[in-house]
Length: 519
Image (cartoon, rainbow, N blue to C red):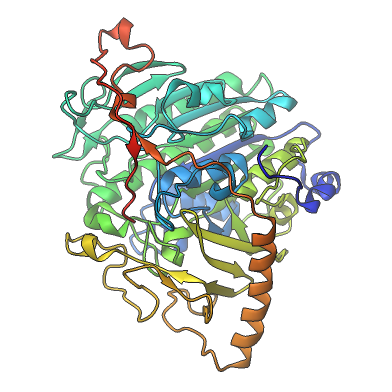
């Protein structure tokens, strides 16, 4: 493993914390519900005024609502890679250094994917006999060696990429949908999507598959279910049953159907009588994509949205549910990252990750049972390969700021619409390292009023945070970047299983080029 030599010492407390948290002597089932581009402000329990998420609100009433849940990146692929590895994208390789400080992900012409050197959560849980399933979007590379069943999952129904299209299958092929290691068909061709009307049955199919997985695995032993539907990613969609039912347009229709899916999954756990031995987590891969306008969600009081390292880009909804273990109707101000889900799941399962690498997630099982606990920890906010900001406690320090590039603003693309803040939402990457921009994000959630550099608070907090950054940088050895190269020949021309469906397309000549990441 490149440049990774140590592990957080907090793992030493696994046995003690596990003993204080587990509901039974059997390892708990684990369900992670990861939404796509759903904002913190889209949930009724977080203040959305239309209150169109009754199942999620009830889940919060029966469990723990987390006010500060951070993603590891402000967009999909690196965020998901971090959740499943417990490691920042700069460590696990899910970034690009073609241009410093630019977001990169896995479109269908990406050459790379998740490295074999990384140990994903299902691979770790397999040591304790877990069966693992992923339902929905993968987005960690789509060439055969990168797909879920090559990285610890036992079952997969979903797609390697988002539901973009329809494409012409001449210059760009339509995206496949997989069952395990073979494609079942393609979006728009075999899995109907009506972009004009915003209608598709995919969320219903993903919900049914999740319920069936629970019914199939509940009596066999511990299971891990990773439910990752993508209907709130533009272009948004919902089934006919939910079409036109929301006060928030098509995006709201998608949220309502996902909320119903959450309700169905929780009910399946109850029906199989495993709810008291199952930890369920609800969150999103990044903040709402404000650039999507009516096809995007709400980040509540937080500044900007997806693609940025401001609060609106990287603070996601967070709900934990585990009847009989997590005190009902509680709220926690513990600062979480989604990498903690990896560490906490391993802790609850009673498995210790290898000590040959650094993990960025903490095992926080005790914080679930005792929501009043707040364990101090830093959160490092990256945009691509650049450390942009760090939060510890209530203080958030920006070393760099960057919102939307001028060329994209001219095209009507804006990651911070109507929320410009002088010297903060800068349209070009701006280095503040010599005089960082400091906020108290518990008081100023919108990052609109920086703390004055002349104040004692500024001097004390900046000095403390700069020490945290130095320690982080001193130990950091970046992983090999996996998102540098693009090639039209690796697109979905001939996915595994296409022969049986007679849906293979001619593969063009390989023309690898460095990917261009504009923001």
